[in-house]
Length: 317
Length: 107
Image 1: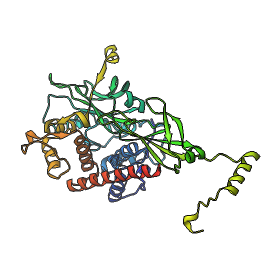
Image 2: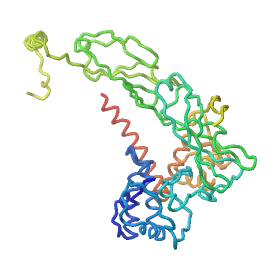
Image 3: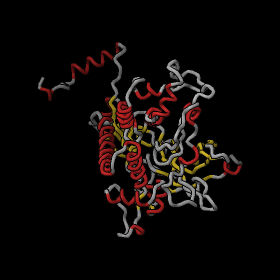
Image 4: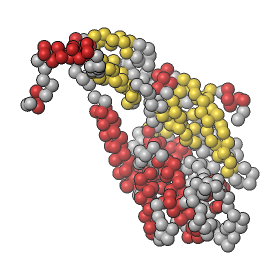
């Protein structure tokens, strides 16, 4: 188990006042809140910050943590010394974290302060005691899965309470049918796949938030797809019919003569299926043939001589 | 993990398109009492269809995301309801601008 330097995580000095710690927490929480932040590791950072604050905001826990000694460095292999917490009493009950998701603090935290286990899920806010809770998870799919529908298996970490009220996570594998036409950010509701009900009550539901793996050449916006299509200067200038990939297979695309760089061509209904289906937008990117042979250079020189072309005319130069 | 669990293929519904939630369902999904959801409606964060009676309210699937975000913001950042409403509106605007930016960058 790795030692965690809560002061380092919070970016405060070891002798920071409670007010300073609170300010640091507020600032970091705003910065890394998963709903607000676009930082790639926001969720992990936010949890780390929450855990650090949970300890440092509480004078009892902070004092206990401090007396572990100042010699520990973040990441060092750590085992709590025996009776390390003698003389301290922790008043449990944490209110941290989003929307009732059953996510525990790190092993490091739990080895020191115990699991938040019993009590932290129930929190007395729910009036429905018989039905199981709804669970939320993310599922990463490929564009092709949304295009044609697919079956994907996902592994969920399910927290469970054992007979002594301690939290354990169990791996649960589910095979899920991905509905054709699903969009990025939408949720698939699987009825009855959440937490089991209590006292014979029905199970909760499982919500899967759909996220697309980035595609090597399509860019997805809702049900519309964008494809950057390189074309040769003569194809753009003279017009051409070229083969392009679409998720449904190759098609012929007519490039109109006199097409400028960045011209957008729409293929109606060739995006992700649905009602209505999305469109496929092809964005022309004019690729310049390299002048790396004498023959090619000679050709460019001829263009220079024979074409009356000033690309900077509109700049008045 | 059981053998049966591995074999079974689960089919669901797309929440945003095929599902409407009642007050009870939405409260349960957010793990809060109905009164908290009613506060979100009062603040204009959620706009249910259906009658005036909360029992007749029907929430679009997207309400689940908005409600969960509002509740998390309240809980984690200690903002009040109107603050959460403002943040959600601004987040929607940021998302819209990001989308436009991505489109412009591709042209």
